[in-house]
Image (cartoon, rainbow over all chains, first blue to last red; front, side, top):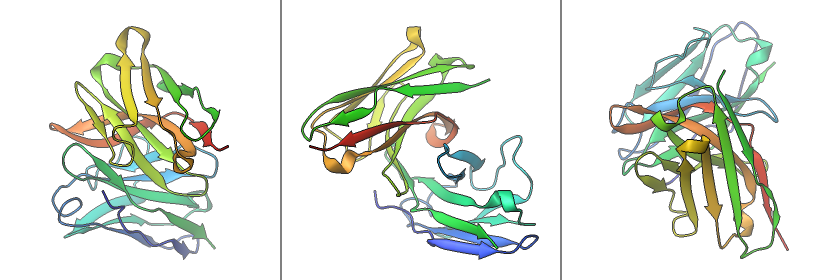
Length: 110
Length: 119
């Protein structure tokens, strides 16, 4: 159950697009289309942004999108807004009824 | 409105025990799997345990923590024994969704309860 690998930080200017990567192995990300993404503002609970790799829950902006290639999943945020500044975590099913998170990425909107 | 409210956190000595509770409302509790996720201070999220008809644990807590539920009380529990300093974290209760027959994602979260393990 090793954590998925995310960049510690990414940044972008308002209106730009950014992508956060989430690298796992053939035992988790690579084997299942079951990656989810969470947004967490300081002192707040996480919020689901993407599930099953690319599905958006009701109420989540279509500026958020997810994809996967091999053992790496990605979250793309287009048209960056100040309110997008937060920590982002990926999570994947890892087999044997276990789940594993990434280490988290701090997004800074310049 | 879905609500999950955790309680039971606090300061405990290494080797001690603590029981966390999570009371939910706004959905049919008995129909959903539930989970605990923790976050050490300044660190990332870590999946701890889940319960549906069966129970599942991360290796880091297996044998020390026990997840349970009381559907009549809309409540989820986490019994934590043999606590260590590295168990210090905010513990979140979360509603789990399945994709097919597989644990998949967390669609609702509580605000968390802080557990501090220190002498």
